[in-house]
Length: 236
Image (cartoon, rainbow, N blue to C red; front, side, top):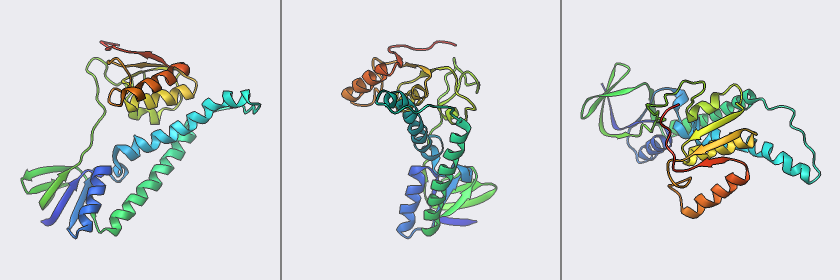
């Protein structure tokens, strides 16, 4: 049975950074993640990195009409979303390889699989028993599915499904006006879709300062995004 002074479950930004810091202090460290493709967590794989790539593309598309007003007529002949997906995957792979290099340099061991507890100082991964002195759980989060609106992968999709769309729809309704919902609204609006953004509260970006919320709401309305406040969806 292998023994580690520290084990970290989850290799997202919290997990792999923690593993790097722990290992840099001289502790024998193990980092556990389901698969190599999951290294980097939500931020790298279906959050910050791909979102910013998509927003960059949609911002250029949205600016074409403004440039035309200034005398620069640049026609959008097509938008190949599959090419965007391909380039985004290449970007994620490049960043992930950098994370893996840092872990290797810090001498952090990596084990792919799901961990389960045997007792307070022992876990099992892929049939292998591992003991530890300290353990950090950094398993992240999953997309919340509402009972009345289950995902079907077609008409009703989650935020991470945005990055696997084969083609853009003509319109989209986004339930939830936090950071992720607002980023999705920006992307689809920039690509020319009819966008409706629904918030159960009385403003969008409810966790941010009121001034930020109001400024973004004004910007969205100027861009033609339909914002519906104080609303809950009961069924679809």
